[in-house]
Length: 257
Image (cartoon, rainbow, N blue to C red):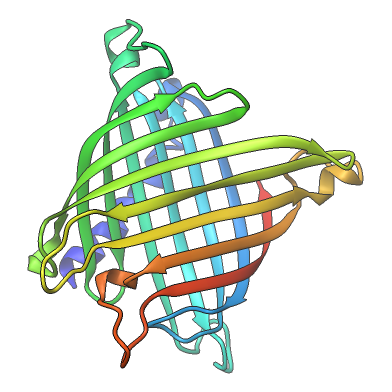
């Protein structure tokens, strides 16, 4: 419990410091957004869920940062704020070797080489640190493509040390007087032990910029769907008695602040 509280305080403190004068001198760009999701097909947890998500992404003179916090309420509870609910968050800073050295670390499709880290924290004894190499790729048509490779160290021996491969992408195309965005991530935990099984989480979002279609600024109001395929969800083995292979679909509303 103390470690989870420390992680939450660390995340909140970083958000406050990011707005300070010293941080602003190093900040190159940032984007913040709020997302609401409602869908079904979830496993391990109740099938139907509402989720509110705050996301932050920023570029710095030393690299970049992505962070988010999910607040989830399970369907059937009487009140969003007092019913059965949970939270989960991640903060993922990456150090750019190109920015830190002042030289290009590019070759072929590789645009930059980085050192990536992630802290996962949430309810239910969730606490994992991740560290490893990453590359940014220059893929025609895509806004960005990242490949991150992590070694995972869970807190307190919750599960064995494992490796994780995480591609991240975003693609924007014009559509019906506005734009369509296809983005998402894949988390592939590629080895396992008896308590934590290998698992594959594919999580794309399909979004249309409805606000821009009616004259609002870009990404002010986006609508769409999120799909979540997750084999052996949470590293729990799928069995005939307990299904942990998930295929969930959610309605999505998103606003960039």
